[in-house]
Image (cartoon, rainbow, N blue to C red; front, side):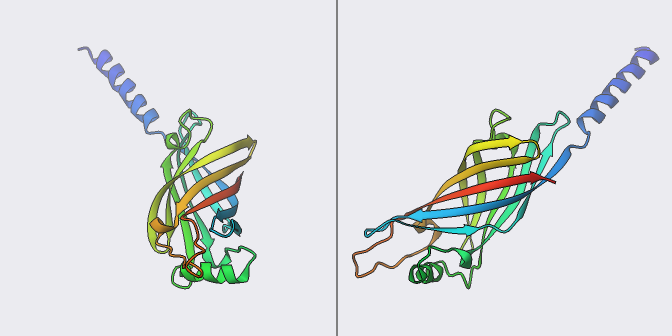
Length: 193
């Protein structure tokens, strides 16, 4: 092999490795989430609200600008969960042991392809929910995705089993019971920093 051909080959390999190891771009988005939760009982349906603390979402993108990885931690103060009924709230907070486990955390650390299989429109969000000191792997549905400039909005839906979460709600008079499934809905707003 001639020296010129060898040099050209080395140069080609070096530039291809440099391009492949080119640092990925990273963008930070500030986020808010208004959450509603709802359930059923043998007497009536019920619902409540809570706001997540402001959070950041780190989006790592490749050299082509397509998102590669998402990372965030969303925190909720469990004692702030409000059903607009003081007695029901007191029972809910006691059953969730909010003094021992004051925070509910959702950790997002996923490849972007797990969120948007087409690479454009998010449809699901794998997350690790830390509730009452225990981790729960969940996959939430993303609906109504809207992206306009530096702002994004979407609705997040997820069901949670009280039994799986270790939350035991006592029956009232041995007749009135709370259903096992709690439906969670979050209206999420993001702004690119």
